[in-house]
Image (tube, rainbow, N blue to C red; front, side):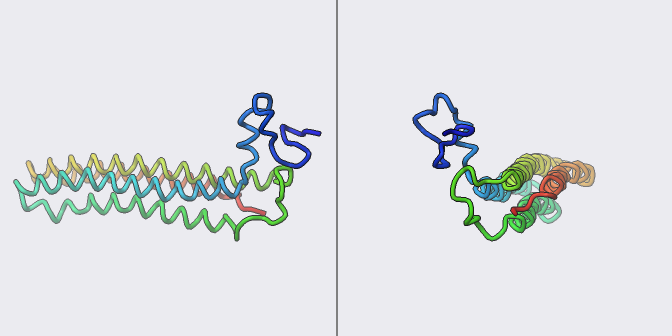
Length: 192
């Protein structure tokens, strides 16, 4: 007897893949695996965004400081904004891992044993992690590009620093918005 593409043994019948589809295979992945993947993407994409931003800002800062050495210390704030993006990912990963629990449920032996609460928790943590990771990735690039422009503009004209810094602060707020959305998404997610 087959229920929802799952055989009586509790596992997807691979020979019926054309009939059952890939959705059955993905649906039988343990929800804690999805949650762990979301936690990893949250911190991983945030660190990549921070590194990308530091790469963009740092190269322009070093190049512009050759012409105007006075800009070195002031423009380090752009590097700090980029590093804050990675810290957002670390904080969100700590929040998500606290909802993860102590590990796998020993009562789950087959695909049929996975409850709706486990699916909700697993997918909720996964998508919260993806949301935070992608928003911090794009935030890191945004802060890096504006920090690069800030360094170059500040090298040309002293009065441009504060104006560009305000734009950079608004760009950095994007990562914070992603963290807030991720916290809201994961509010009711916890493994039973």
